Length: 254
Ligand code: ADP
Ligand code: MG
Ligand code: MG
Image (tube, rainbow, N blue to C red; front, side):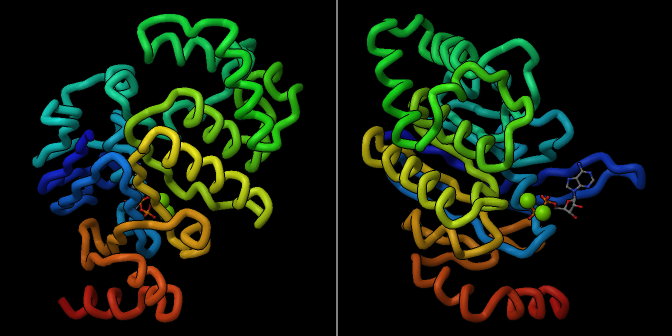
């Protein structure tokens, strides 16, 4: 079992108006095999948390810690974080001219495992995952992210997740822009990774829709840069009915 621990995390971002504090004391503990949903209104700092875990240079950690089995994640480079078993979907959002999906995946797998995968198993694994995700074989020969539709980008993310076999995945708004069929296929991919490898998932979402397909064990409501309420899956049901109004009202009068 592995544990990802976030303790009293304060993060700010540089803007044209100066330094803006965004995360104001986030505490979270995620174990492998668990799925945690982070839900909250727009602008509450959900993506900032994801970017901070990913090591995005724009976000400055002012205080607090992120550790993975006791190791200081904040001291790790982006590559080291991946090798340590963290999967951050937004890590490779850019187009990579001249690099095909198949070469990209093999290079990433080799970098993360420290050795090249055996060709025979690798080709079989890639084919199986692509079939499971209903991806056309021709997709493997396309250049990474070049002209990918929203749905193709998400499938490519989940393809990476299935093949790279991380311990933890941070999925930020994986549901956005997906139609119901694509959402089901992508969710099934996440659920397979949970079953097959005991993946721990930090599922960040504004809407409850994806939680019908990927069942959270814990739900954390994010408001104004910190966790305002925590519970089990029933909390997501309540948010689906009530929305975030009661949290926003509480924030305004605080
Ligand atoms: P969420 O994902 O919950 O919608 P974000 O983390 O994207 O929230 O944003 C939280 C707050 O921080 C917002 O007010 C947003 O405008 C601000 N913010 C986030 N990133 C930046 C940035 N790179 N530059 C300026 N402001 C930012
Ligand atoms: Mg937002
Ligand atoms: Mg966001």
